[in-house]
Image (tube, rainbow, N blue to C red; front, side, top):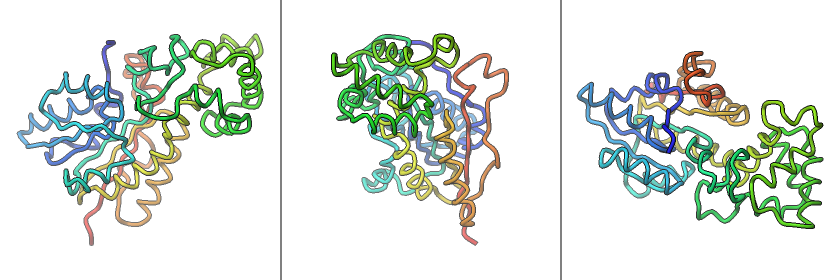
Length: 298
């Protein structure tokens, strides 16, 4: 597996302040990079810390457990199910909650998961392998108007109509089963002069498919609302996003929470990676961090 480098690590720790100790939830555990740093900072400050790591991908949980061992608790699930922590009496409140939204680097780098148009694999994209809807389900069965809507809403793809029509026409002859096959059809819809420009012509369509398969935006809204309610007094919710659709949702929800007088924005603008981090970790270029704190009752 390629080395995992968590994005905005220092900035995220500055927001969450795990050196305070307490109960923390990494709602998108992944390979555990952020959690590992939380543990280190709490140990250095000699403060007891309890961390619950959640991920809907069982393979991610396995990798994280190999790395972190018994230092944290593990749960398979979606961050839209945070209330289950309270329902199952795992925690009553959290001093810090982290949500790192989007696909992880190891998922992209694993062709068998079907997330990448750069590495051929089965057309899947399910973060939870037991999910009922895959990318193949969508491109092979959804009506053309729904594919257009998906590409526009989740990918902001300007060639949505042309791409959707090409997908429907192609599947009449042969079903889509592989990522490279779908990517090739998408690329053909672009003018020859635009086919080799960055970002890759399939980027927005694959993003839209991934979001649709995993209900990412719906889950983000549900997860945020639950996370805000789970915060203890002084507790912090930190969310890292990687594209404008997600960041817009977080910005609007955080603003509404701040306007209620119960929460305080830790920064008015999103925190972005430094130039040094961008060079060292290109994935950080699109990352944006927003954080909010639960205020004491007056």
